[in-house]
Each structure stands twice: as structure tokens, then as C-alpha cells.
Picture (tube, rainbow, N blue to C red):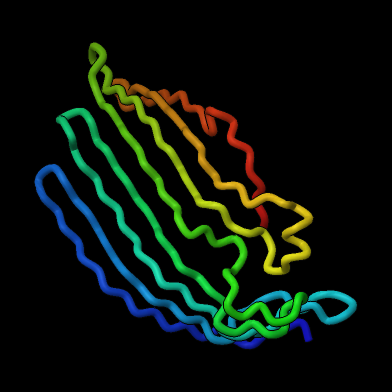
Length: 187
């Protein structure tokens, strides 16, 4: 059939938040299990959406902001994951239970620095940010993954600068992926 049953997920999370005059943070650890997770399963002549087994992920999420000076804000966010197929016996490659799911990097981070200042009667800023994702597979099936032969990490740097007039009109100049990092995205 072209239809799959619902996924059932259970998530346990424990976290803490803190806020101080110049510093704020959030930290959480979690354990998530998805029973009957939906995946495309090979039928012999094509693929069909089906409930494929059980997948679990344990992880840590954190974010923090620090006003290092009156003008400089530093921020960090990170996710650290340990995903696994607990049970996936009917993938196109057979039983891949115990393997890591495709498309889920174990480490994802975002780091930024924003400096604000005044130029005459204008509010101005300069910002730089770095986005990072560790290597991850593009496919569940090893044969398809071998065709790409790449598990490249993502590491992009972006920057922006802008000013706001007294009347509220804003001008912003930005550059994305300034160092032209190349990577593959899949849906």
C-alpha cells in the first residue's frame, strides 16, 4: 500500500535554564524512541511508505548567550546526537538494525558574534556566524552511499553588517557561505 500507520514516539527530557545579567543558557539531555517510524521500503518494483521498525536517539542540546561587553554579544547553540536504528529489518539493503540513520549529523553547532555601535545618529552592527554539521550518510543503503562516496561535513561562514536610521529605516548587507563550502543536501 502507499500508506503507513502512525509513528509512536516517546521522549524523556531533563533540562535546566539559567539567566544572569550578562549570560543566559539552556541545557537539555533527552532520549527519544520512535516505534513504527516511517520510511521508504523497496517493494521489488518501486518504493512504498511503510512503518519500518524502531529508531532511537539520545542527545544533548545546549545554547548560550553572553554579553561580553556592552557592544559584543556572543552566542552558541549545539546539538550532540547518538541516533540508531534499533530495528529496521526490511530496508532495501536488508537488515540495517544497529546502523546510524542517514541525514542525521552527530554534531551540529551554530556560533555567532554580533558587535553593535553608533555611527553619528545611526545604530549599526557587524555580525559573523559559523554553522557546522559533522559528517553524515545520505542514504540508509550502503550501496547507494558508495555511489556518492562522500560524507562531507558542513562548515559555512556568514557575515552581515547594517545600520538603522532614526526613522527606523534599516539597511543590511550580508554574505552567505563566504568561503564557498560545497556540500550535498538531500530530502
